[in-house]
Every structure is written in structure tokens, then in C-alpha cells.
Length: 195
Image: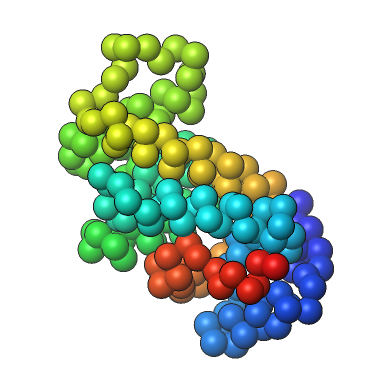
């Protein structure tokens, strides 16, 4: 259910910022940004710091690989908005043309052993975390496994919000515009907007 308050219920500073974003970007603002700006003390500041640290902070995974893990989790959770955005960001960062279908058939899609190991771990963590044991330790470092699980946690949360609030992009051009904007801001929003 789309809540109109997430489109029009912002305080004046956030409304002005959204207007500037839409004017400069020549399209509507990213719905995740609108959600974060709606109640920045509750969801914006802590959430966006966490997002930036997981998706663009130090990691054994490249930014593009983390975006692929995000797209993979979004596919597991059947979140069309996030699948579209994060296949777009991953494509921009890796130079590969990535589509949701490739993540649905990931075992046959040629992602390489490191990503395949991460996808296997994340898939099991999503479907039956209680069944994970020592035998499930993937053929990647503990730090890489941990970082992949952090990305999974992040997108398990945002996928549910995106589906619950009916986030969508208008067309493929809009999807790629949002993906480019996300890559440009690197998951960060100016601090003065989050007060």
C-alpha cells in the first residue's frame, strides 16, 4: 500500500531537498531516500550510515560485487523495485549487463566461485538459517562471508519496506537514473537533511 505521507509528509527542509533532487535529476526522487528523509531520526540517520558502511565501506568485496549480492537477495525476496535498481547499479559498477533472470538461475549463470559461494550461503541464511552448520562454511574468507551476510541483512530489511510501501520505478530509463544517482551519492545523504 503506497502511503501518501511518504511522498508529501516531509518537513520543509526535506521537501525543499526533494524538490531540488527532482529538478536536477529531471525525475521523481528515489522512494528509499524519501522514506529516509521522512523521519530521519528514526530511520534516516542510523539507517543511511549503516547502508553506506555496508555497501561502500571497506570490504573484501568490491562495490559492484556487493551490488550483485544486493540484487541476489532482492531476487530471493521477490522485490521488483530493488532487483531493478541493484542490477542497474551492479551493471554500472562492473561493466556487465546484469538482469534479474541471471540471479534467478545463479548456479548456471557463471558468477564465479567466490560469488557463487556467497550466494549459496546467503540463500541458505534466507530460507533456513537454523540449518546452517560448519559444513556450510563457504569457500571464502570469514570476513567475506560476514560482509555478504551484512548485505543480506540490509536488503532483507529494505526489500520488505519496498514491497510493503509499493516502491516502484516508472520505466527502464527511470530505473537506470535512480541506479546512477545511487552510485553517485554512494549511499550517503548530506547530514543537514537528516536533522
